[in-house]
Image (cartoon, rainbow, N blue to C red; front, side, top):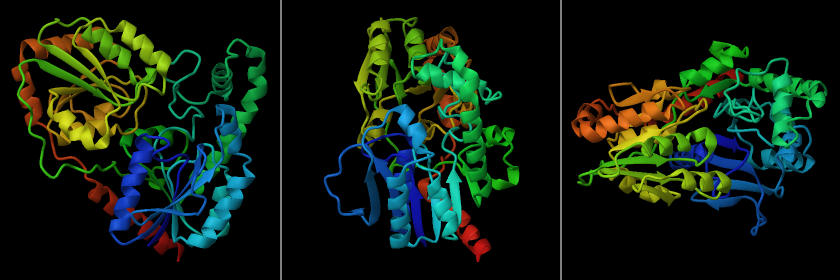
Length: 416
């Protein structure tokens, strides 16, 4: 098939779950013999202006737009003529049979209209909650609480003001609310006209059903991962080695893990935190000041090629998220390495981690509860054995691609 992926940002400029998944999916599709291209804006200057750039058979159209403020990214959904024009040219050049929209943040909605005018089917993967929340995470800017969704779009306006640093300018809220209502209506139309919405979890599908997306319009297809050819061999050690792998951001709850670790015995415990420390440097600095346990190490970003070796050194992986995660690939990666997961019971995590079977759950934000679980494992490490035994095989990238391709084929068949 001829496939065109559309995403708001891409590697190596941005590294996140949707970017990594899109790369893995597209590369695997190329290996299977499909003709695959990616269209994405780029903030950094482009040294090679010859489009597309080819990466192992994958064609990538990086369109320079310069660095944009959050407000400019928001406005780009409604007006960005350079991207609209370049995308129209890309459609003519690629002549795809189907367009897979991975994310539309900061991309003009006119791109979807161009897809429709070309008579092409399109599918959307709902990597987060951006279609209902401009923050994409259903987490408020003004108090970092989990949002239940738009309430006459007044809370959306409140969030927008907080993001610009004008949180107390509340008289503007009633005037901003209609803008978010307009955004909501436009995006609802985009969702409802898609031939299929792919969600990585049942929880994500549930959230979108609450905003009026019919259940029969969605297909739950969990992300797949590249599993190691040989399972990592755990490295022998006498202490409990706790790991965190992911983004270093407040909504990820890394401070909850550190607060819990500070309550543990100083002997027999190590905590290694992997993640990019440059994205939110102020938050990282606060974490480093908070960390009083001598066994806590900030190891920096974990490169993909070092993932399995790092997991082989861990006894447990902690996912202390405070927001409605949609997939959490690190859970699958930990399970693929035979490592149990301790996670907060929020969002998709109870769907991914079976409490008492392959991991343990604790109330989100409850550092004392997390510390009690970890202390119990320090004192009785044999409790990890049944958790390791309870881990089931994870979804592979091959299984994921097979199901996604079946969706493509059905969309094309129905359109014909």
